[in-house]
Length: 53
Image (tube, rainbow, N blue to C red):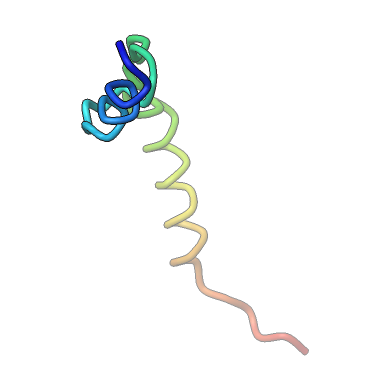
């Protein structure tokens, strides 16, 4: 492969950016404690506030 061929091959967008991509790991699902945490935050927000003196 000539230097010109190599240069032109780099211009072709194949998505590898110079090398083969490694297989990506799937992201884990939502945190099971997230619903509890969100409910606690919403309860704290909705709680009546006492006026500062």
